[in-house]
Image (cartoon, rainbow, N blue to C red; front, side, top):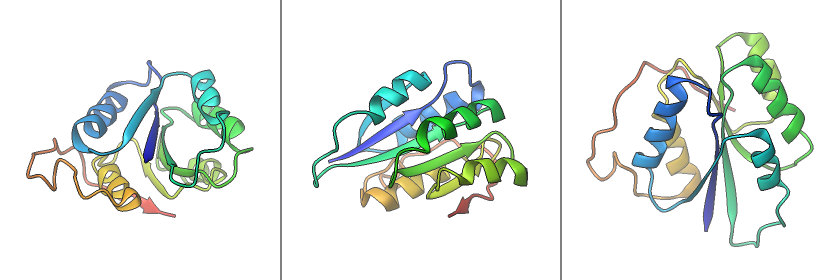
Amino acid sequence: MIHLVLFIAPDAGKQALLLEKTILNGIFGLRIRICRTLQELGASLSRPVPSIHERYIHVLFADTRKRLKALVNLMEAFDDLEILLILPDAKSSTFSIGARLRPRFVISKDQRLEEILAVLQKMSGCPETATSLGLRVHPLLPSKGLCV
């Protein structure tokens, strides 16, 4: 079983709501948990080690540099996390902060968030997404996402 842990703070804005909607409406076959606070995310990380048949993928929406730094402080102690990271901007200094999490995929919040679906599909081996089923996913903006 593959678990998806989605971190989106309640005050993260319109792009965060779009990301949540895109993921909830666009990917199937994953067990999704939404964490709204850093404490909730920390509790999720502190759970017992999953069995060999379970994987956790973390999608982290950092809408501000302050929140990004808090996420880094919280998650740096955990090794081997599969992280997809949405940064507050595309500045190289922001990317440097986020790189400390060793994410598998990085994109800024102003880019096409639908690309997260393609990455999740690839990581999970799940063939069923809204686009693969012929459903229309609302397009946002052109993307320049970075696979790391």
